[in-house]
Length: 184
Length: 146
Image (cartoon, rainbow over all chains, first blue to last red; front, side):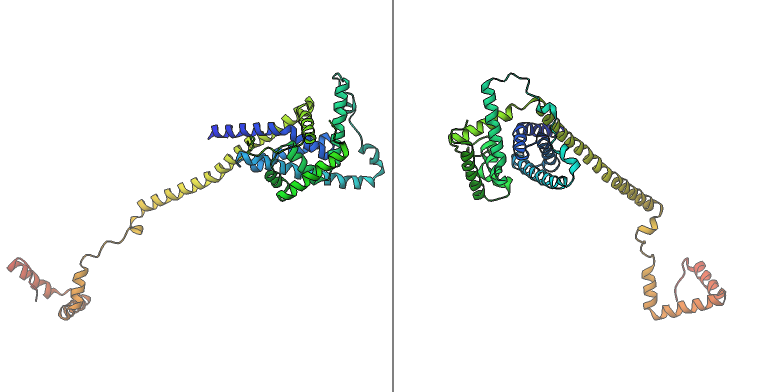
């Protein structure tokens, strides 16, 4: 009994370790904020473990991403409401866009031109992905980044497989138009 | 060929593959602070799983312990009742001489005799009858009816 519990816990640990980086990037692109992205991923992990830990391991991935997508959407809504309320409070206007100076400081790692170009390309990609409509962004990241098949992506998004294909196709078209076909 | 998730790998054009490669690279090169925060989040979630299991065991124990105590109390009560008050729970033994009573009621002569005897007894001891019965016993060794 105890041994199976430990095995189960190890499997969950392995699964979460495997998805956490991609999940963080998906949340970061959707929320455009590192701390919010960390909160969304942590919340998704807690909910998965609390509610679905006993489910078969092959169900964890779509469940986890579904929870994460719901969390991202909730945070976006919350932020929209908060920003509308804060817009009426002039004394909060200055602190709203406050950025941690540590985050703004340049990376101490050596920054060759190639790395700079890579960072710029990455920033362009993040911006382009962030500007996609939510459903297109979900479909693209789940399919092209996380590698879910159409069926599982549809489970995560709560829509038909046809919708997933449509959203994904449109996302690719939009990205191609924004980044240029030769983007790299 | 299916991937580790059991899904068919999707066909991507070069543009998509470049995007995917960039995204994967960015996920793999997260800074130490972010990695550390993610690891902490994961451990917190798994700790919750262990805590949840312990609390489930405690909850089960909290439910089953009073139930067991109650069942034990019922059993002890039953055993005590069974051994100290046997007449309550055990079936009454069959009446000895019930068939005699039945024959008494079914025979009209015997019934009259019984009534006479009862009436005599209610007035006082029927000494004549007892003297006659004692005489019979002395003469024959056993009383004779009639």
